[in-house]
Every structure is written in structure tokens, then in C-alpha cells.
Image (cartoon, rainbow, N blue to C red):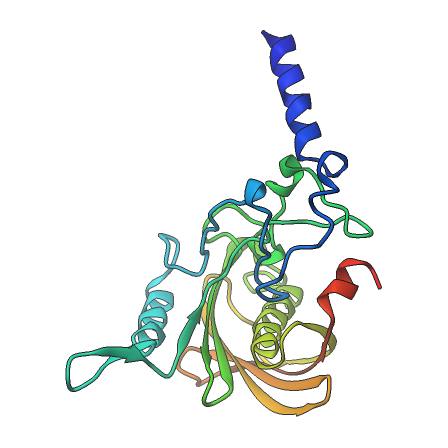
Length: 249
């Protein structure tokens, strides 16, 4: 029995690895965006899970702000019809496909273990709990972020690198919406006040200007009532050609 299972497992690995399927996968899959997920060939597809929806680890303030912005994603007209509101909730998925050097597909076994950095902790509430909303008209993006205990830096407070990660996540997503696929070229951060572990903060991103391939963004991290400024930052993103990125060019 063990030998049969071993042969079955090795056969499955062979089937899902590149050498067996390279001829069918000569073109890389299309990106929805450089910071969300990619489209898989049909035989590798799986239904993605949206990690930006409420779960049992969300505290009252996280839930309150989620409901506040989510209620503005759809409004009811005087005639009782539903229409798009000023804000749009942005889904957040695990990255569902990895590339090796040169764009070589890794096996499905390895792909199943691949996780977007901010979604790398499987325990709900232990690290990065967040949801993003975008306002197209105002060219603003807001992230609601609840920091878990695994993000500790200074005793009882969030690590500066974790804060930088979330700033890059929010501003990078915003830049992608504004300019298509981008990569971070520069990120300047001024830390003003530490963020207590377990607390919820607002990360607000706004467009400064666009110059050719360059998108300039400003961002601030505040308490949920805006009374305390935790962090200020500016970021520069460069538009990229995804096909060149996947080929390592």
C-alpha cells in the first residue's frame, strides 16, 4: 500500500511539474494586478479565498470601520435601486502561483504552500489583519489594519518593519489601481508614535502626482479617531512590464 501511494505521489508530481506541461504553458498567465493574484491554467485553478472579509479575530474597532466604509460601497437611490457608492472594497488573496528563475512553473505541491507575505501566518489575528478600500473619485485608498501579537518589535508594540510592510501594501495597491502594474522604487518613512499590539489603525494613501512611469504617493498612519499620528511616509512607484519581470529582464 505504501509503495502504491509513493508511486501515485511521484506520478502526480511529475504531471504537475513543468517538464510534462511546458509545451502547453509556453505563455505566462495574465495578471489581474502585480499585487493580487494571477490566472492559472484551468487544470491548476482553485477557488481563491478572500482574506479581507471579517473573521472571528477582528476586534470591535476593526469591525466598526469595516462596516463604515463597506456601507459606502453601495448606496440606495430614491427609487430604491442599488448603485455603486464612493468607495470600493478591494479583495485580498494569497498568491496562488510561484515562478522560479526564468519563469519556470513550480509543482502544484509547492504552489499550494506559497503564500503572499502579509498572508503567511495561517492563525487568524496573529499577524496582519487588514482590509483595503479605494475611492476612485478622490484618488484615495484606505487600509484598516489590526496588528497581531506576532508583529511585536518594541515590547508591546508593532515592529517598524511590519508597519513599513503595511504602508507598502496600501500605497502599492493604490499605485497599481492608478497606474497598472508597478514596483516600489522608493519608500521614505518617518515614525512618529509607536502602535500598540492588538490595536487598529487607519493607513491613508493619496496620490501626489504622476510623471510618465512614475507615481508619487503620500501616506499617513493614524489612530482610528485621527487624534494620533503614528507614521508619515512618501513613496515612488515605477510602472513595469510584467512579462519582462517574469522573464527576469
